Length: 182
Image 1 (cartoon, one colour):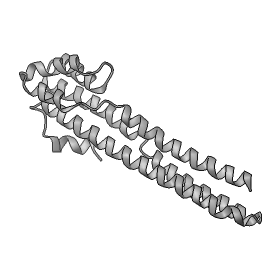
Image 2 (cartoon, helix red, strand yellow; image 1 turned 180 degrees about the horizontal axis):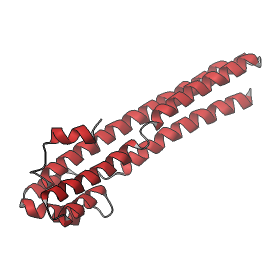
Image 3 (cartoon, one colour; image 1 turned 30 degrees about the vertical axis):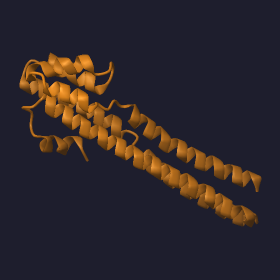
C-alpha cells in the first residue's frame, strides 16, 4: 500500500512540476510596464526605438525589438525586424504551452492506473487516497496552466502596445494579430 501511495504522490508531484515549469518560463519573459510605453509616446517617432533599446532591461525581447528597429534603414526593414522579434516572442510563449494540459492528463491517468492496480492487487484502502492525490495534482496543474495563459496574454498585449508605439505607421494591430496571436 505504501508503494502505491508513494507512486501516486510522485505522479501528482511530477505533473505539478511540469505545469510549474511552463508558468515559470512564461513569467521570465519581460513584461513592459505602462510607464515605459507612456514615456515612449512622449518622444518623437524616430527616437522611440533607440530609447526603447536603452530603457528596456538588457537581454529582453523589448530591448531586442528597440535595437533591431533602430538599426533598420527602411520602413519595410523595420517591419521585418519587428516581425522577427514578435515571432521569437510567440515561440517562447508557445513552446511549452501544452505542458499544463499534459500535466493534467498525466495526473488523472496516472491516478486512475494506480487505482486500478490497487484494486487488482487487493489493496482497496489505497484507492481513494490515490485518486485524491491524482485529483489534487490535476487541479493544481490546471490552475498553474490558467495562470500561465493569463500571463502569456498579458505579454502578448504588451507586445502589441509596444509595437503600436514604436512603429506607429506599421499595419494595424488587427492585421498583426493574425500572425502573432492564436
